[in-house]
Length: 128
Image 1 (cartoon, helix red, strand yellow):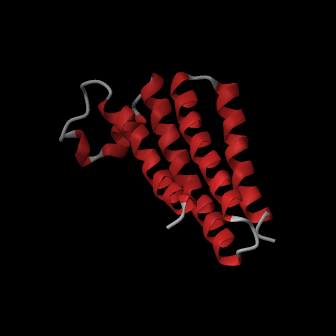
Image 2 (tube, rainbow, N blue to C red):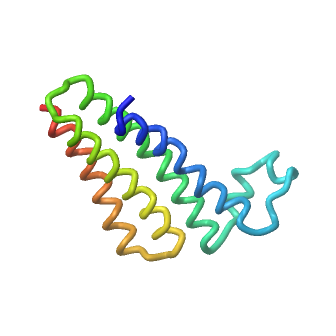
């Protein structure tokens, strides 16, 4: 297993960090809300709502990142160090993205979102 493969596992788990912030950062989410969590999450506001949005975006981007890493490995055209570095950079960008989203730092959030998408594009580009 390569560092890039480990980064896939980390990327899969990262949205759950933001799920936890949305649901458990203060009292309020109970077993009763867990019967219909989507309705409960839709009523959040402030940093908890932003954490929920970061969670959703995380789940949206993981498939593209995972495929990019697997394609880079399958094709084998890029040096493993390059693939690993791009994967680590992606994971860092996702952690920063979520932190900036929760903090409501929109410009920085957008910048690291673009950086993360650039890592995905670069993984495909080095596979050519």
